[in-house]
Image (tube, rainbow, N blue to C red; front, top):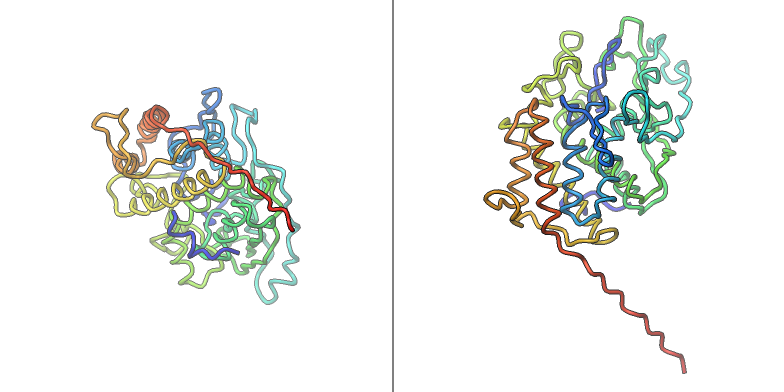
Length: 365
């Protein structure tokens, strides 16, 4: 496996598990629904402008074709959504993986209350065969990965196709009927697993899934560290007063606010600095992938001016504007700005002409 230290520079689980709760995730769903990049039709699913709209822009800037940029955009968002489409129709899905049978709680929770399964929550999954589901057994691995070789390093090597096998871990929680959240569960259990995903290792779909987890690792960085400090095997959002407060993890998915733990990832809050870091890490990976493999255009440097925008701001300046100009509720403004960025990038990209030199074999004497 490639050490995470080699690529980090190139560049929670989690939610409240009370009855009927929507699972929260890194770069929380904003008040904006998915827009099919092919048809332009709006669907019912709320999205993250970081995972969705901005991924398309970053892929274009990195030199990918429009078609490949759409693939990266859709599969990034599917890591959260599982399925996308208007009404009951499914236009895109990342279903088709294998979900393992749960272990016997009598065997793994000896001496602990385990009458009620608190995690995973298959009844809340949209696609029961989506291994990346926020309600599934692999949720903490994909959505709250540690920035280490075990978690993000494994996703990196699988997304790049350096290995055909994705090794992650399963997460389970049991307790009593009164234990409504993972934080209150009596028995938490994890085990290493080979994840059978529908995305082929090294494909753009797998790479986009890795990019999603890479961004999430920054979004949930403080919460993961806080949960590590509490000795928890994985991170979860805390929901006071149901749970004891853990400030880096406190979040109410039913009532998202512009100043909550994920809302502060936009605008002028200090927390928005981790959004900047996430975007730069994702762009570094996209540019490296484009240059080495699928790219059709020269990746734009962060200091490249975009002539099609007023004042010709650099790529770096436009990314900062995307994050810091509007608060969490300004999702529609971010989408409109992303559209302007995409148009400016498309207007000035330069084709990448790859040179393949013939191999001359010397005849032995």
